[in-house]
Structures are given as structure tokens and as C-alpha cells.
Length: 401
Image (cartoon, rainbow, N blue to C red; front, side, top):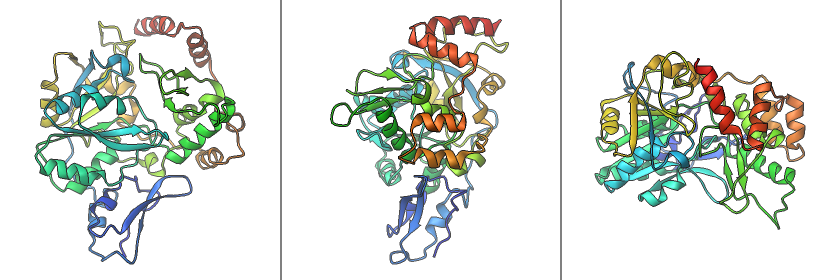
């Protein structure tokens, strides 16, 4: 029997399940909802492919340069409908315009996060927006390989461990593949998020027979801000605050992540993807002037390989790109080079999120997750009064002095 990665080291990338020629490996949710590989003894032929493919057991992959080209950027058509500057959409547009396929994380109608394939610009909206939980890969690596073998251009965007899993599965580099890794804090499970949505439904007194939460945004898209919101009709979104925003508050305190996230081997320079995307937090505030308005969001774009550099050069005329420095990029993007520290009550918090008897208010109070400082209070009330952008502009000007 193969010995796969332990619960502490498995990232859930699903490379082992994708590579198995006998379909003897299934990804099954553990007690915290995280997918773990389970081997079917009756189907397994002990070929060892899964062990050789697992990035946690054998991570012998070429990485990008230790001196990536650093850029700030946005896409004019996508900036106001994206969580940051819309640069993922900018790269995706290039691939799709050439008849290629784009693979990324999407929330389905049941608010389950999983990777899907799109082939038209009209479907880009399925992939836009940050999803602060782990996307289920399924067997999509096999689809990607088929597209690559058919000589189609492919863009794959995911967490660094997912990019690593794909590359290990493919076993070789493809010129027609572009990979984007994200600056990742860590990933909660779909089960924890589903439980949060159920608790939010009750807290908002939305009866399933009357109104049901059909959409969720982890943060606003029309500018920088961390206000989660829900929708009961799939179009109009209402922000949530206090204990109703507990999922993102727990996320910010690193209390919900997969165990392997706290010892992430990908939180470093060099990076695993051709391109790395993140928010360019702090741009223009640390001695490096930036003459443009940042309120609508600015993407940080690292070109880690020659392929990444060429992708930036090929961006369309609606893309804005300005070269910056790595020093500036790292000041407020700690997860580019550091794994998130584990919350001391992480196990208990996840257990209570999954406990149907525990309300959001009870969990928030029990662990102090809803305690607010002055800055958070100002953000909340300025948002409720429709003054957030005004207050944020003043804050940015003061910080840049």
C-alpha cells in the first residue's frame, strides 16, 4: 500500500487522485472538512505513481527566479468588478482570445468552491472575485493535460500548492501552459464555510422557505475593502458586520486553515508559478511614490519566469502596468514570504464552526473574534454611512506623508 502525505503535510492538491491509473484514490473530507486522499485497497496495484507525484513527499520542481520582475497593475475593463485590480482577468482574456482554456476557482449555486474550466470571455464572471476557502480540484488536472496535448493554450490559476500539484501531475513543462499562483494566507474548508452560511442564514432570520442565501462575496469588488456581503437573489449584495462577518474575522486571525498551511513551503521567493498575483497593499506609502488613485484596487504582479514576463508583455491595451520594487511589494504582503501563524485555539474554533448548536455570536464571544480596535470601528461605521471611500482616501494620504 502506498504511504501518502500525513494530515499535517497534505495540502489537498489532488495530484495523487489525478495521477492514479486505476482511480484507486478518492479525496474524502476529514472531520474538519478538508479533503484527504483515501486509497481503495482493492483497486490499488502499488505502482507508486501517487507517492512519486505527491508534492509533499517529493517536491523536486524548478522554481522561478529569486529576483522576480515586480509590477503594479490593473485592467480597465475588469478593475471595478474584481476584488483587486483585475489582473487575473487581464491574463485570462489573452488566453481566451486565442481559443484557449482558463481554469480557476468558482462558487457554484450551492456555494461550493471548486475549480472549473471556461472557454469564453463571457464566462469570466464565474471566476472573478476572491474566494477565501479551498477549491476542490476534482480530476480537472486530467482535463488540463488533454487541452495541453491538443495544443490549446491553458491558464491555470490557484494557490501555490495547487500549482505545484498540477506541475507534478504533468511531469513536464508545456509551452502552452501559463500558471498563476496566488499570495495565499491559508485555506479553510468548504465544510466550515457551508456551516458559516447556515449560521448566517439563521442569524439574519432568513427562513429557507422564504429567502435563502444564494451568493456570497468575501470582499467588495468595486474597490479595496474587506466587507463580506451576501445576496438572496444572486445580484444585490448586502454587507455584514460584527458576528455576522465572523468567517472573515476568523480568517484574518488564521483560525480556520488547513494544518499544512501553517508550515507552507511555498510562502517564499522564488515562487512556484510563472506569475504571482496579490493585492499591492501599501503601494505608495513606504517611500516609493505612486501617482495614481488606488481606491479601486491595485494588483501586485510578479513575473517569476520568462513565460511570465512574456505574458505581461502580451497584455492588451486596456491593461495598466508599472514596474515597482520587490522591497516595496514585500512590506505589507507578509504571506509572500511567510506562512500564517496558527491561532492557539484553531482546533476548537473549527470544531465550534461545525457545531450546529453554536451560533455566530456565541463563537465570536467565546474566542474574542469580534473584538474591535478603533480602526475597525471607523471602517465599519464609515461603510454603513456610505463614507468608506472618503475616509479611506484621507487615511491613505496621511499614511503616505
